[in-house]
Length: 77
Image (cartoon, rainbow, N blue to C red):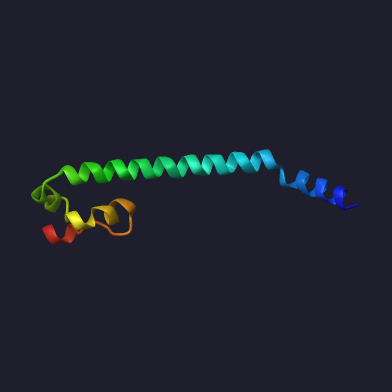
């Protein structure tokens, strides 16, 4: 009886769809990470004056790219 319950349980999970969803989620997160890493790299190449023009300082690049902090655009007004 235990085996029958396990078979029914596994049938309701629909395992291939779950694995596909996990794989898609993983690929999405890897893609997001790659894009953020590239953005950080490009911003790090800018000099301090150019960073100031867009309202950020070098120490805030990762926070701005990750969306934790917004650029300080009010400082230029």
